[in-house]
Length: 153
Image (cartoon, rainbow, N blue to C red; front, side, top):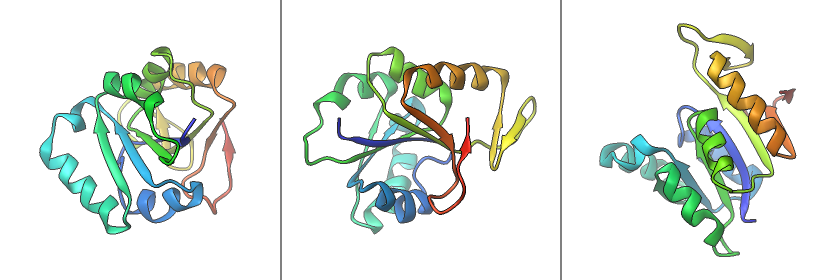
């Protein structure tokens, strides 16, 4: 499977992802699985600029498109799969895609959100989705950047 890492980060593609995470996992392609971003030319263009700055290819798919095409990636494509929420990762797993490792990076605070570690704040639904993910992947962990300590989930 060419997916090097699946990362949950509500910011999706930004400097930390292209400047640190992609290199840390050896990715040359960032795939964003998000229905709203897939429908927004402006959001796609802004994120593409960030990826292009470090010569990384990027693709923007709906969740269903991701499920339909991710297994057809070429062996030369080393993918960093970016998802905004645990719900998205759960939907991808329920769609039959096999994921090995899920990194929880950034989930902003807000009403009804509980702080669990670092920059990760979850709702009851997020926790349910993360618990589901934990049963389907080899490894799930919380880590903001590769050089920081890993918190178990």
